[in-house]
Length: 109
Image (tube, rainbow, N blue to C red; front, side):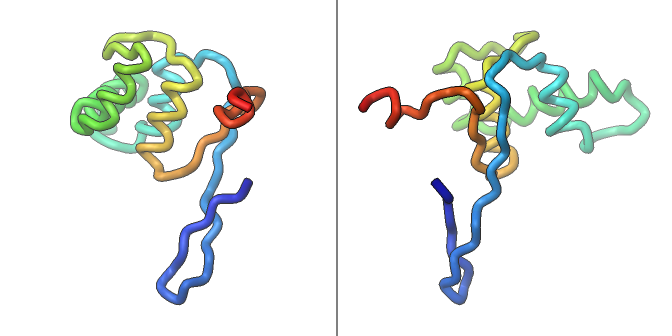
């Protein structure tokens, strides 16, 4: 299934889809990929990325609530693919598909 949005002329613009492997991810792994470009470059880049990610989640209560409903706590060292999916989609406004996982439509019917 292809997702589209429209530009001002009404022409559909394909939405980017990021494929995510269905496996646990370390918090640091996610933070380095999606949050490492912010903040001071003099800090430890790994710690800085994790701090940036945690602060981002704290600042966006909608994301924080969605993650907490899936069992997220701020000091988790490992994140499920669902948690990673929610973080990436919120951060990048990109659709995230988990490879090897069934969609809700496939599971329900």
